[in-house]
Image (tube, rainbow, N blue to C red):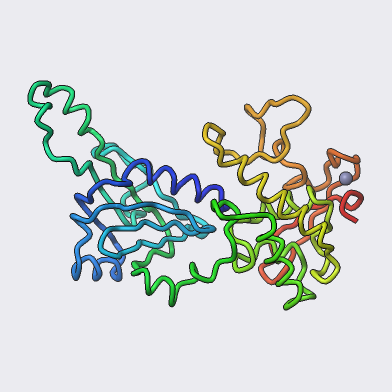
Length: 301
Ligand SMILES: [Zn+2]
């Protein structure tokens, strides 16, 4: 499942391609979306903005319409120039939003037709493949009925603070003292954005055993967990960084050509030596969703 940083990158890419532009074509294979489009067409609306909230991607159209999508395990948004060949087959397409600049033909362009052609070449299509959740909402229905409105503070949002994250963990500890911290880190209603990889990496960074109950986690440990979550995720969405997730960069910064495990402290490193103490990394399935959790028994007693 893509983690919050992947969705954040996706939203940024979609925003760059179609944000501020006018929709020139809309296609969907989903009956519910098609019905909304029949009632109140998407074509002609402006793409006001594209946002990530936790693992959700939201496209805001003018006229109070929001396309809310969740990638779950297999969904993805792709961006293509109009006419470019798609990388996935058409039968996997769920939604296409094609948009181009709204600008009217500028008077100065008559002097330089070539320059105008260059300026107006920004016609892109955002194509959603395989997503299992794609819904239209108004601002009100989003607030009222969607899971999006129930998300906890988003680790990658501008307004996120370590204090806010700690408050969310503290409240969870009070209401669900027996919850394991590894399960709580994945709970999007407590804090939004973290997925299974970051869960293990963040617990390692904080020196906290992921199977400990919330009631045993100290204030200082909560701070360390939230601080690591914010640091890792922010670093992984910095402009110019690779799309591969990195938490461990090693003695030399050689991120090139490293396999997945070589870029992590503990994730998928079961049986290998801890990079800090040399003990063998362990793995155990955790929680009702039986997600793999990796940890060092010495660094995270
Ligand atoms: Zn260790």
